[in-house]
Length: 246
Image 1 (cartoon, helix red, strand yellow):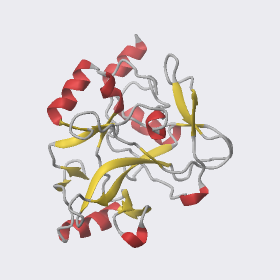
Image 2: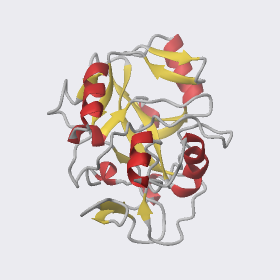
Image 3: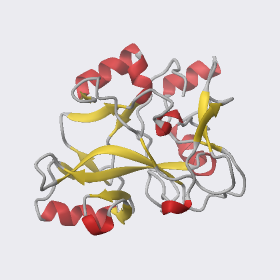
Image 4: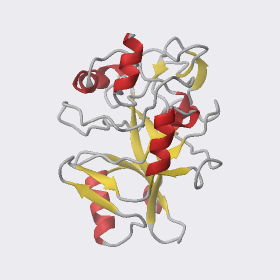
């Protein structure tokens, strides 16, 4: 994904009007998926690149790997993240917010041994871990937004800007195409074929669970009859839209 003149947080879009989780519903394709490739993209900006399947069928889930050379092991505190966005720095183009869904959300489980790497219902799983004191981070329920939130100083990380970091190469099919957040949310489910899923892993203490990475999964119900570009809804950004219109 070529750096563009705007700042976008992955995962800041408001909840969709589809009646499901605002992050979208992932499809647990397992080993049946194919490894996507990076190639030139018409929606990736000047000399842009994108992520593609090369045969019919869905892609395997891919991780948004963080750039550990930036910030604190790849993570930025809120002030640093805001500064990068205000300055429209190269890092801002690859900034990832650790976000959770709501009652209909999902998580990737790399914490529970017998279910390593599988999708589990977020509400049921996370509620149990919180009640048992297994979470290494402070995670709360946001009643206004109807979703879980990470209440930590470091909630954002910078994805590694390299073609080998496949997930970071995905473009947004709605870039410059919507007039406001509402229109973006309605179109996202029909235009972007990838969704984000938070990943649960063993914390540094070797006992508890933590969330420090996001994965991209194929959207459930999408047609994979032909090879196609893989796109992700990054979220509506007012400055980005005004720039595109001008």
